[in-house]
Length: 101
Image 1 (cartoon, rainbow, N blue to C red):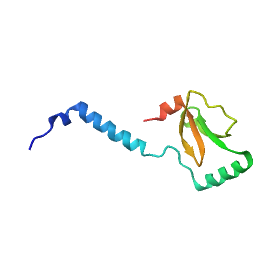
Image 2 (cartoon, rainbow, N blue to C red; image 1 turned 60 degrees about the vertical axis):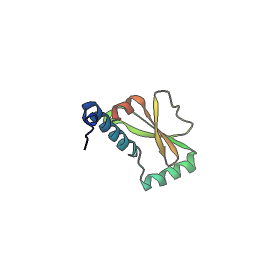
Image 3 (cartoon, one colour; image 1 turned 30 degrees about the horizontal axis):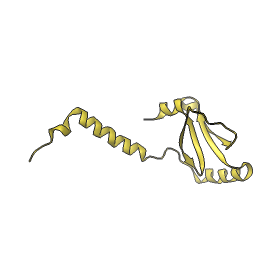
Image 4 (cartoon, rainbow, N blue to C red; image 1 turned 60 degrees about the horizontal axis):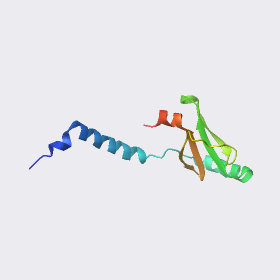
């Protein structure tokens, strides 16, 4: 039996580990929504029209804000994380970089 020694080199092990981590992280949902929040979003949508979310701030002091879709201008420094119950969810790039693994 031949052992592929190349697979055990530190750089190969590191690459395998990071590939595994990246695949795991990409399978994790970035934005979660409770059923109660869905009901609230439905009510807001009926009153205000289409919605969007944006999160900016620092550390634990940041909270996502809900806006009418045409009320907040997304800039080049914003990252779209996902859609939440049909509404886009953006985060400021510097905050995304801070929290991103």
